[in-house]
Length: 413
Image (cartoon, rainbow, N blue to C red; front, side, top):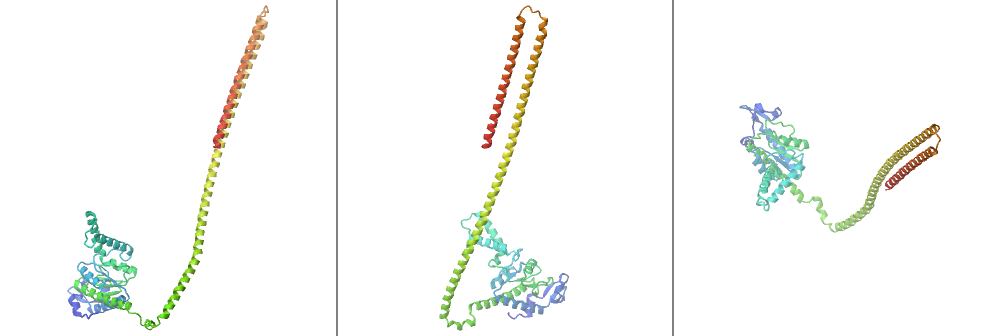
C-alpha cells in the first residue's frame, strides 16, 4: 500500500459526512465531531480500517480470489469501471440486477445471450445477413444487456467478496451478499448502518475523488495479490528440485503404474459387466411382469363383457319364449271357446228340431229329410272351422321355430 497521509484524505474530502439530522447512531464511533450542522468523520479510523481492508484483499487475491466492484451512482460509474478494469476484476456500475448473486444461473444465461448478439453483430456491428428491423431490435437488446452485465461478462461463478462504494444506496447487493455469507468491504458514510459489513471504511461516499481514492487502493491490493498468485503457480516447490536427478527410475515407475491402472480398469470392467447384465435382466423381468399383468387385466375385462352379453341374451330368449307360450295359450283358449259355442248352437238347434217334430203332421217324409240335411251342413261347418284353427296353430308354431333358429345363429356369430 502506498503511503497515504491525512492531507490526501482532506484534499479528497473524505472527512465530510452528512447533516446531523440524517445520521445513523451506529456510526457514532467513527464520527470526530460536528461543524456547521455537518458530521466530521475521524480520519484516523478511516486510515486504519482502509489498511485492514487492503491487507485482506491482497491476501485473498494471492489465493486467486477477486472482488466484485459495485458502484451505481452517476458520478462514480466511470471511476468504478476504470479501477476494476485496471486490476481485471468484475464490476457493476449501471444498475444492480436483483438476484445477481442469489440467482446467478439465470444471470449466466442472459450473459450468454448478450454474447450471441455480439457474435451476430460482428466486429463492425453491421449485422451482415440480418434484416434492418431485426438488427435494430438486436442492437437495442445488446446495449441494454451490456449496460447492466457488461462488467460481469467474464465472471464464471459467484464472487468471493464484494467492494461496495456506497452501502446505503446498494442495499440489494448488501442483502444478497449477507444471505450467501460473502465478505463485504464497504464505504460507510454517517447516514449508513455499518452492521453486516465485514470491513468498514468510514468516509465520504458522494465525492468522486474520495471514491477514486478508495477504489485505487483496493485495485492496487488486487494487482499485488494476483502477482503473488502467478509467481506461486509458475515457480515449482523447493522440495521437488532434488528429485530431478532420479528421473529414470521414475519413468519405470510410471510405466508400472500405467500397467497397474490398465489391469485395475480391466478388472473393474469385468465386475461392472455382470452387474450391468443383472440390471438389464431385472429391468426386462419387470417389463415382462408389467406386460403379463396388462394382458391378464384385458382378458378379465373381455370375460366380464362376454358373460354380460350372454346373460342379456338369455334373458331376451326367456322373455321371448314366455311371450310365445302366452300367445299359444290364448289361441288355444279361443279355439276351445269357439268349439264350445258351436256345440251349444248345434245342441240348441237339435232340441228345436225335436220339439217341432210332434207339432208337424207326418203326412209326408220331406221334413225328416230336411232335418238330416241341416244336421249334415252344421257338421261340415264345424269340421271346416276345426281345420282352419289347426292350420293357424301350425303356422304359428312354424314362425316360433324360425325365430328361435334365427336367435341361435345370431348368438353363435
